[in-house]
Image (tube, rainbow, N blue to C red; front, side, top):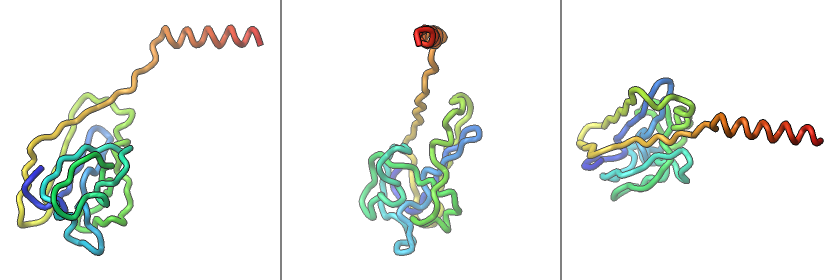
Length: 148
């Protein structure tokens, strides 16, 4: 994204029963009610990243890197760094990746215009053990039990 004030952004991702708040006025706090003044955004969201985008985003310049999603499921007018974080990407765990995904992005303040240049979604599945593997493990356990 480019061309505006990142502290004005609100974005979420929805799929099935899953819901994650990606951005909710990043950088916004009681000391900085306008949020982050960065103007370009090139980020990857990952629940396991080291830093929360809301509190780790720079004040000026551009923002890039891998961050935890904002996860603050609260009205953007009230979102602060101290707001509770509940809407993580983990809400999609166990859901079928097929079907419709919705990315919603809004600039919730007047003045600047943001442009979404591109976005992508990567889903990493966890392979289920094959029937042969499960059978072999069961046979090993049965043999071990007989010996014991």
